[in-house]
Image (cartoon, rainbow, N blue to C red; front, top):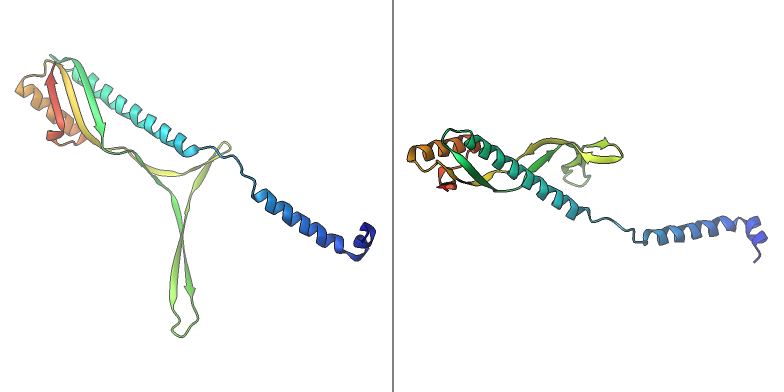
Length: 173
């Protein structure tokens, strides 16, 4: 068969459609190189947690150093878990009815995460961020050896961070 005969008969459309289908199938098998964003997100999150911990330690250290008679304070804070972000979700309920002998009704719920556009990037809409809980506090410094002074520091840490007294350690340098 010649090409001019195919064009006259309209078979060229069928062949073009067939070739387009093969090309699309071939394109779908091409392995597009994706960035490993999971690891990057984990590293950023760990860095944020370290920064958060260091900021808390510095604030507590500065606070205790400002108390008369206390100096050279070092603080270590450990966290129980990571931070948690609560995302905005839209929910849609759809009722379905199956036509059988007993005509059962069902309800299907669909959840969609709301995203916001920042520049060219879509990010989920965060409704609330829950900071990590503090697991324990260790404090060392000069001028904190007296029982009355230790009690004051324990009460302060418990009031600030809601940490049980048995998870707060205070030692004289």
